[in-house]
Image (spheres, one colour):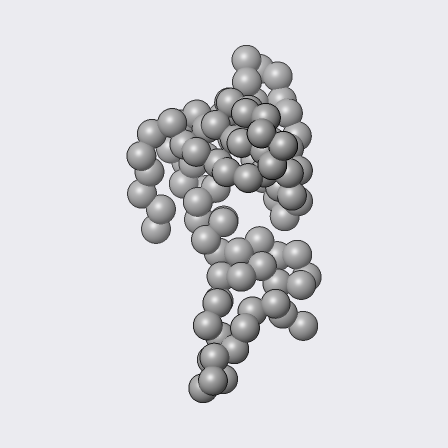
Length: 92
């Protein structure tokens, strides 16, 4: 079963919505890959207002691995409000 909504004609109107199975959306994957490929720093704002900075080293369906000064931080995606790259990126 999927959280994606269907329009009146029966087609999926939100193809990039996260499915009930926990698969990350295509937009999220494209954005995170673009950040990692560009090797730019990011600022991550958490839902509680905390600001984290570093390089995105890896990610999966539940978390991202942020590295700053060779110290890794595992950040759960449900706690993230915003990810802001330090440079302008093109996400395809």
